[in-house]
Length: 225
Image (tube, rainbow, N blue to C red; front, side):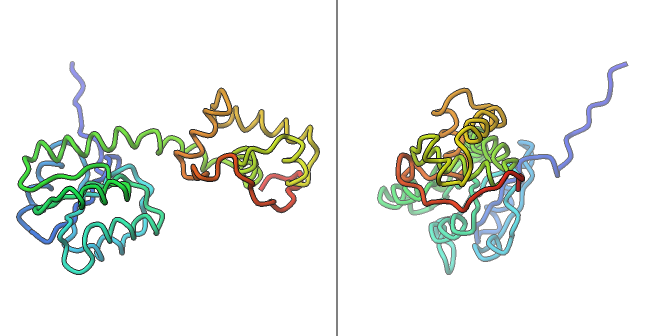
């Protein structure tokens, strides 16, 4: 007897937030994305979206550029300021090259010009989630780090040698070596470049801080935080 297959719970599906002041477009987007096995929440304004506070679930944000009040690019900037790292897709009915370039510079994954086919939206969302997967995995690993381990990553990214790290963190050099080995194992990083890539993807370390002079961290004692 073939076992009955049940669709996955909506709470387990990647979620797509769609923001547009056109009810017709929201309805079409909702139907297309639900058919493609995504959870969907729709909003008619950027402010309604920004009032949401939990961005931890895998997903994507689809923003109309021409929103009343704060436009899509303004909402995108505010999402970043609030710590939302979900990929953003901008929709526009008046797409221009400068606007598209600005959106991409701000970190938008894609720009869709209206009118577009439902399949184009679904394909863009799937591609955004696929490319965002390494960041989500990196964030998951980094979330398990202690305060001591996060400070260690910061020092390593700053280009410090073990002796300098020991001085900065107020521990012995042998302790630094032990912590570095444990850190590499905990993050499943086989090399220093792999560790740095993971730290950058997770947002723990900024690219422009690599090799710089990290600020001296407060002494870290033997008990993990």
